[in-house]
Image (cartoon, rainbow, N blue to C red; front, side):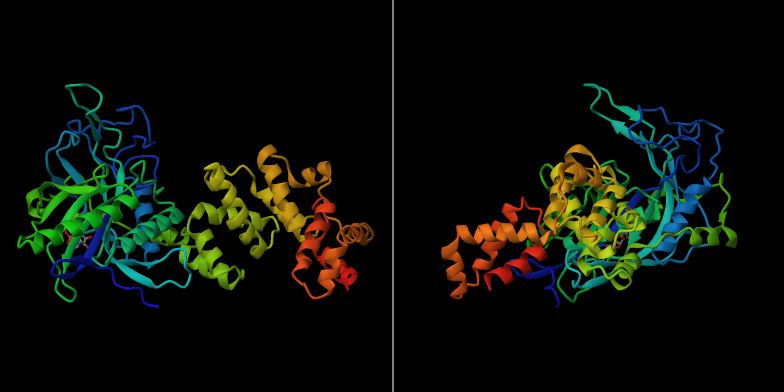
Length: 491
Ligand code: ADP
Ligand code: MG
């Protein structure tokens, strides 16, 4: 089914929104792009700064192989050609968080060429429409430091810990047409980066930030003038910024004004963008090849190693879960949406659990519990081994579905293993027909009127008898056996 196109309704008719995102993703690497300084998040200000990062005179940058490797692997993961020859350029500007007076980036010869990402317009619906978003390029560049304005009433400070950290700038084509598409693109890009292991995708910590380019036009017309909203740091804010900015542009245009190509800032507290500066062009930055760095030349052995080290990616994994493991499209989508969930799930399978019941249990019971506890799967209170053991107790008939839920609750509370819980508390499911028949007889005696009603055709009462028998059995009777025996006894 085609979903209706997203439109902004103005006084003079409908407008289409055009969006392109430039994502800055911090490369997962122990050291910076051109120095050996550490990159750990949250360190004391200015404790991870080498002389290179502080731009001391005479210091020379040396490219970090691991950063390049991660960017190459990312390029491969989005199906892009890797440029075996690329080059670093200086982007010159002054700002207090940039001691070098220029950022080392790649303008003319980026490391990674054109790729693409497939997004689903509704992550939760496996049948939802998909769309391919083009990626123009990925280049590698340095991050700047950070100004701190909240430490002193009249002074500002500079923290250079981020100075020189490697970033991948991932530039999309203007292929998105709604906040929802932009949100889906960011989530999918984040998933791919996390699978590849080239960026942790942590938007709160600033490991992934988006510059949001937005323009509006009448459907069918050419591209309108865009604005660029800088450094938006959550998916929700990106979506809100697009909505607000598109609405603002429509209002300006409908009032007879023109859109100024400019750089804007998103203010989450007021949920609006505001003008920061007029848009600068590449020539304003006086880009030129960095004379301190040789062009980057990659050999085939390096590229093959990058290729060989790529993991199974989300789309492929999802497809395999559905077609090879027989997992429902919904569960396959949910489990493969994040690499940690997929990893956790596969460790449960490695310990012998059957894929379909394991997937059902994970997306209902485990996710439910994690939600209640406000925990991520990596901090799950039960281990993969415990999960596999619980599932095997269900598979071999020791536990019924409802008993397994009880056991799981106890696991969450006590951290004990499921087998031990079953033993210690006698929570084993029973198929002892004699014991069950005895309880059925008591239930029928106590409810002679209902037995009569049932026999006169009130079929719905069957559930009542199941419930009463299960209750009498302390929840431990095998439900299938109870059903069979009840059918016989009720006639
Ligand atoms: P610049 O080099 O000035 O930043 P680019 O052409 O590289 O400009 O585009 C930067 C980003 O802006 C890209 O993500 C691109 O998709 C997006 N973009 C370009 N034109 C438009 C437009 N008219 N509307 C929305 N986004 C656009
Ligand atoms: Mg740009």
